[in-house]
Length: 282
Image 1 (spheres, one colour):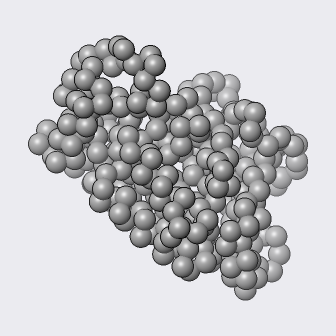
Image 2 (cartoon, helix red, strand yellow; image 1 turned 180 degrees about the vertical axis):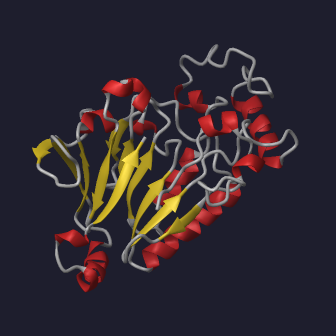
C-alpha cells in the first residue's frame, strides 16, 4: 500500500473537490488520518494545507481564514495569492517568512484531532511516525517552509499527553532537504526533491523501522537526506532489497515508551525480518 500526501503542487493542479475523487488519496478534502502498519507503531498523516489560499473554493471558510491570517502577518500577499512581492521588508522577519501562499496551516480542527491521536498512541504504548508535506520544525529546513501553525503542532509532539511517543517527523516541501534531531529526541527528516539532480540523482530509498532505530537505506542516501552537520554518517552496506551499491543511515530512537514497543514486538518477531519497511520517495 502507498500513502500520498497533499502538497502545494497538487493544489496548483487540482482543487479539493477534484482531489476528493482521486483513488490515490483517502479523503482528498480533509486528508488527515492514522493507521497502524505493525503492532506497536502508529503512522499519523497530516494535511498541511487545510488552511490555505490554494485548493479551496473562494468562499470556503478555510481559505477565508488563510486570507485573514496572511493579511495580518504578511500584507505583501494579495488575497488571490498570485500578486504581490511576498518578501519585501521580510528580510529580517525570521520565521515569519513562512507566511506565504506556497505554505499552509493545519487548522484548529485538525490540531485537536492530532492531539487526541498522539495521546491515544501514547496510552497504547505505541511509537509514532508523523507524515506531513510542510515542515513542523524550523530547523528541519531553511526557516521559511514550515506550516503557518507549526508551533502548535510542535506543542502537540512535545506535550505531556504525548509522553515522548513521537519517533520522527517525515516531510518534503523544502527542496534542499534537511535533518534535525530536537531536544526531545524527535528526528525531523526533510527529504530532498528529485528535481535537484533530475535523472542523475537517486532521491529515493527505504526506511526500516525497529524498536531501537530508524534505518534509511538507498543507493545514494545523501540525495535523499542531505549530509548536514547533525545527521549521522552514512555507511556502505549490502542489501538484497536494493540492487547495486547501497548506503545506510541509522537514526537511534530515544528510550521513551521503548519498553512497551519491545514487549509488543517480541510477540510478533521471529527474526530481524520482522522489522517494518517504508519506501520513501520525496
